[in-house]
Every structure is written in structure tokens, then in C-alpha cells.
Length: 278
Figure 1 (spheres, one colour):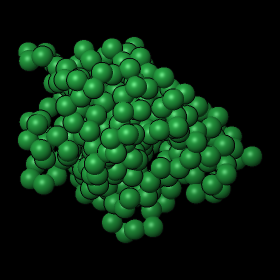
Figure 2: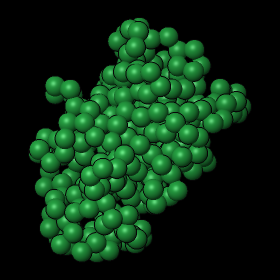
Figure 3: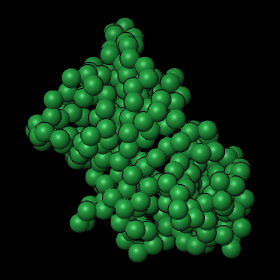
């Protein structure tokens, strides 16, 4: 058994216990794939990340990201949470105010803005959704077809069947059949809030297919949704999305498009610091 530095970070929040928790193991180069997967399964969090020495000269660190059910090439809240934990443990960037993360999708730039960080959303592939599958997904969600405004497959590492509904109340009212969804797809749902509030959209993410019935706050999904909706002229170039409301969380995802890049930002706070034996 070897001891590793460990941080548990709450991501997409400035208030502990209100975002999405992430387990981070530092200096994990000696761990095998099986050990990483076993620890991720044991934490039972939506994701666990392992910080490693980079293999690219352009990167500040490398990360591998595991769910309880397998490895992901990229995920949003592990990107921001891993960056926060790396910096807190004394990580020094090659460029002030900018971090470059190496992961399964390549190099991901992260900009540091005061108490918040934001990652540059990686390219997302978009495909139409088969109508027969869409009908089954809507039935598993308990969502009436007339509430649906648009649907797309979005893939920036994690692949989500993504639905745009008519209003935030429709999203918050969803009571899914997770057993039915498990055999269909990971599903992301978004809809606009009424004007005048602090958030413009409400988001939920159902990932029973990888062992997470509902993810509290999902950076990769929000990144793909932003690229889709801004690209179609549906969403503005800058907005705030709420996620985790139905789980008693208050996640906030800050979206901003600059040129061709969509930045996905949020706060991170460390809740647990210590060591883990693996």
C-alpha cells in the first residue's frame, strides 16, 4: 500500500456541499488502471480524477478521469476540480493566469479569473436522434412530446442525448424511470427560465448508464449544450445555467462565447484534504 495526497473538491459552487463533489488523487503515476477504477468505484462519486506527470511539454499536468463504471476521456467538473486541487497543492503554471490540462481528448486550456476558473470547451460532435429512441427516452423521463423543442446527440468525450424543453418548470418536474433510461442513453435536459432571475437555464443530467442516476452538475454536458444552442442562435453568447436543484444543490455554470471558443466556468472549494492508501 502507498499513501497519496488526496483532496475532495466541490465544483461549480462557491459554497461547500452545494455543487458536485470530486475526489482527486495527487501524484498517481504509480497506480494501475485497475487500482484507479477500484478507487473510483469505492468513492461512489460521479467522477474521481488522478493527477499525473504530463507527457506533453505544453501541459501543466495530466489527468485521468474515472466514473464508478469506467474511464472518461474528458469531463467538465473533474477538469475544474482537478485544476483547483493541483493549484492548491502548489502547482505552478507555465503561463500566468492560464493552465493547460492534458487528458484523453488532448490539451484543454483553462483560464483563471479571480475566484473562478473556466475551461475551453473541446469540439463537440452533433448528430440527429432516431425518433423511435427519442420516443422511448421521453417515455422514461415522463415528458410529453409537446414539451420538446429540439433533440440532438452531443459528444465531446461523454456522449449525451440532449433535449431542449419548453421551460424550466418542465425540467424540474421530471421524475425519470432510471432503470428504463439505463438501457437507452445518458440524457441531458435543458430549458429556459423566465426572464429576470439569476439563472437563464435549468439543466439536469441522467446517467444511469454509467451508474449515476442523476449527476449534480455536469461541465461536459453544459459545454456541449452551449455549443449547440449558441451555434443555433437559441441561447445568448453569455448565460448562467443552474443544475442540481432537484438534488438539493445550487450548481452554477457560467457560459461565455469568445470568438469560436465557448468557455465553461464555475467556482471550486476544497472540503477534504488528507491522504489515501492505495
